[in-house]
Length: 142
Image (cartoon, rainbow, N blue to C red; front, side, top):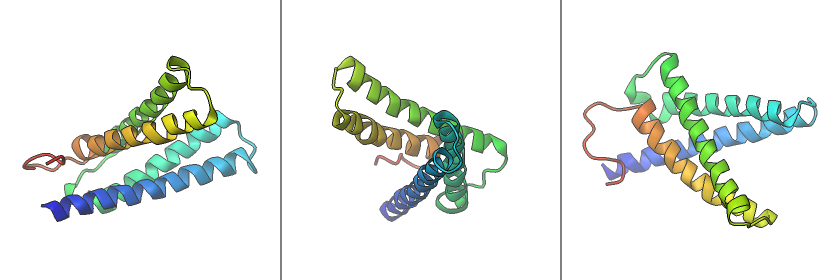
């Protein structure tokens, strides 16, 4: 069972890294050469990253769950939006609540602590809400 969990975590992480690369690359392209505004560029790159992550998880990491249709994709996007909200909340608490306003503090709180907490939420939400497996014994924590 430990090997299965390890494969699940590695698959989830690999798909997440690919989705992050797509999000970042597309955002950079849309902001630069395409000349789109930051919010439009980020919204489009976020949707593209979510789509890549969903496809990678549906066809790879969680291919055995057999979920189909738009509902799982919508749930996946909602889980990812919740993860983004966690990152923003960590940044807001650090920057505005605690007064840690340096670029380093913002990076640590948003891209460090926020990303770690958001990844835990995304992993839990993806495996529990989007790609549940019937008859699972125990949880992913042990």
